[in-house]
Length: 234
Ligand code: HEC
Image 1: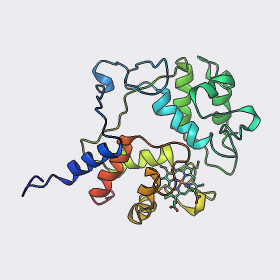
Image 2 (image 1 turned 180 degrees about the horizontal axis):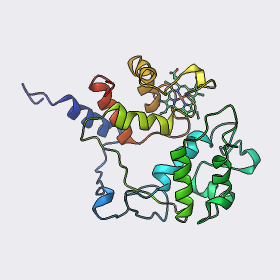
Image 3 (image 1 turned 90 degrees about the vertical axis):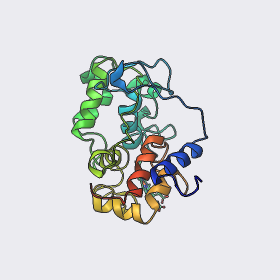
Image 4 (image 1 turned 135 degrees about the horizontal axis):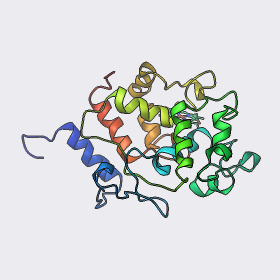
């Protein structure tokens, strides 16, 4: 269906992803630059911010979960040195002094590269800057409508490489890459796209990657669309 005029592959993926996610009667909030109203479904006390602002749920939490709040480090069970970085409440408990990044442990330890420890990838300057700006602006539990865009062509350069750096590269690069799996270059990502392991891991059908949380449904769709278009180095 429809007879003799099949839906485009993109439309079929769209329908499948919607059903996969529970076929909800979802209403999407307007993009952030059309009025600045909040678009969040997670967390309490969310604050709508302009699109260039740093938002905790979109910009900070993924960094904390992938680079700090992991098993053996700062997840709930391990809580090394008493620090837990898996939620807004846990980082606010003892690591953040709102308005003052330089007296916030969360910022100072990543700024001087004490954390993550030597065998792990350091945070990128962009991630450090995001943490700085987020604390400077009051360390709110802010939620922004995602910048995630699936209407224009998904490219490796624009969306996929960013998605990988924010969610995967901290554990999948360098000499301590988990299972020797590298996801830091196009060629490496393409290998795991082609053998099916990347998509099954982010969808949680084999194991769940990143461990402990799922990338957003929009990011999943970007990966599906990028693959459907041949996973090009575009
Ligand atoms: C906190 C560290 C961490 C992060 C972040 C992370 N991974 Fe992993 N990844 C692991 C570990 C550990 C394993 C090995 C798990 C095992 O074999 O039990 C693994 C294994 C994998 C595998 C192999 C799965 C298989 O079927 O053999 C793939 C593919 C993978 N990760 C992709 C990703 C992708 C894509 C992301 C980002 C969306 C990501 N990982 C983020 C730690 C991480």
